[in-house]
Length: 396
Ligand code: SAH
Image: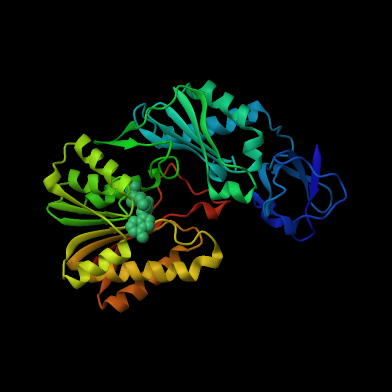
């Protein structure tokens, strides 16, 4: 097996079980380079083996740790153990239902760096986002099949993380039957259509599930504006809770039309909702100019900052939409505002909301902090796994 050696003074994060080793932490050596994804032994500066990882030559993160136990072999048994443990966690959380949906592998947080596996009513959708999991793909598929016996396994490895590893996009059926055009999943009382082929991420925003339940607590008899509505999951929960009227804004006509299909699927009549195909920044200004107001506003934008370099620009965009939304809320209205940019910390996001409140000239109080759903757990040795932050605010 190839070995890589950490520089003196750069061992601490691996000893603390952080799964990433940046190229700058490694000593240069003259040994031939392993092939991408190969398993390497990681040595501290005294040549003690402290674990094993996968080699990613093109990425700034040059090694992703598989194991911190030098004795553990990276073989089928290893993947079986990690996948079983991840499934047990979802079982413990009560999140595995045969006709439901759940993230069953959340990459580093489940000890499988770069791997995402989502379960959608009998089908699995996978993203292999690092050289390590790419190299182990067939073994991982074999184990997933043995344990879960899915109807089919579909690959959606078309992510920006994969590009950083210089891996080409890879999309298509890996095993079993082709999923239908739309898989219908049950989320408690509601049903949603999921397009695993062309939908965002693996087709659906599983990470927002609990926040939609939180929204529904506030919706009875209220007028709700759902910005960045995608396939309408927040709106469906609002209508399910008895919202008087829901307005969706999204720039994607296709997303809005699937949203409308989802409303029909759940028996919500067209009179209960309105859909606007447009740019949220522009549409919120139009509402402000026409003095239209709402009781509840959801702001769930796409990732505005995908790197640290984009934080300032992203902060201005977050502030702008939050300021506009605060202006549009009626007295004691409720704002559910989110950021899924890992580069924006919870602290910074709160500060952005505070700046927005000043500009909107509204008194705003946080009444609940929101977070990604429990099947997207945050491993304490890998704090980067906390990416989705939300604030439920009352705007006076
Ligand atoms: N809230 C959704 C997920 C939002 S994903 C859910 O719970 O499922 C982000 C959505 O924002 C996408 O549907 C995308 O089409 C839309 N979008 C991105 N930029 C936009 C913009 N400037 N104006 C309106 N919609 C936008």
